[in-house]
Length: 291
Image (cartoon, rainbow, N blue to C red; front, side, top):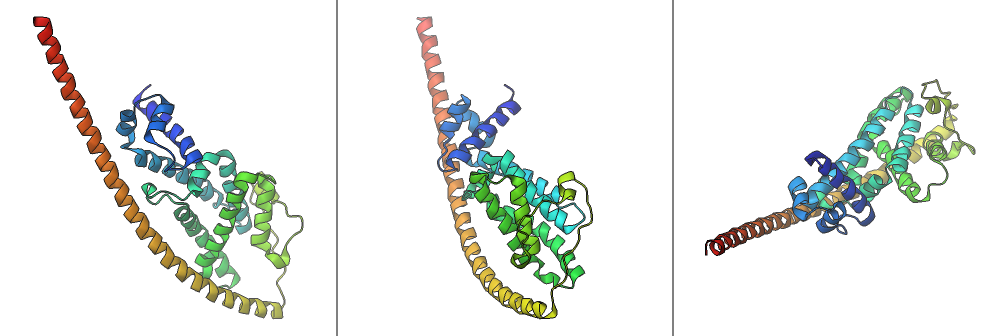
């Protein structure tokens, strides 16, 4: 097996083990034993468990982000929403192990590879879509970031739930997700369906539902203002908590890096000791032969 093939084999094995047992539940010994190689082979390719975990997480993030980005390239907002929801569910269906790794409490060894950071990256793309949509409808584009977080969070949490239940099918789940996001609770369709444009890959025009009455609009505006204030308070609290969590992760990462460095130093010393012993044994063998 070539070096590249061995590296890919170790990544596949580690991906399965991390999905089943998490970072802390998986050991270098187990990865090496499953691949039928010695521990130094794993260290040679990745430097330790943290290294292979970071590679696995980065690959899964790039795969999912690529699928979501492609889905958001559609022209109509409804089609974008439908395709993005379907893309996430497709990823979950086809890469269940990868999704399980992403939604776990990601270890500090993964750096930015946490589910929260993944959601943030997707939300930043959705934010641009919503900003244009808001501007076209006369809404405040500054609210787009908040709505993007709400929308992406709703889809992501539904995906986590669907990861294990798998019922109903992904297209039906996507239809209900879009039904709630697009129509809202007051305009919910009892039997939603994915549009033909999304199913067939075309970008057809979609009829926009009629506008609400002036009274309903005023009530909605008041409700939105209250919700915006509450959301801002919640966001500030979450920012503080996120900063605390980030500091904890940094400290944990520093600790793990130090431990990994110590482990490498111990491995180096062990290899040097084994080399000296082997050299000494060879000299003794030569001495015995000369006698």
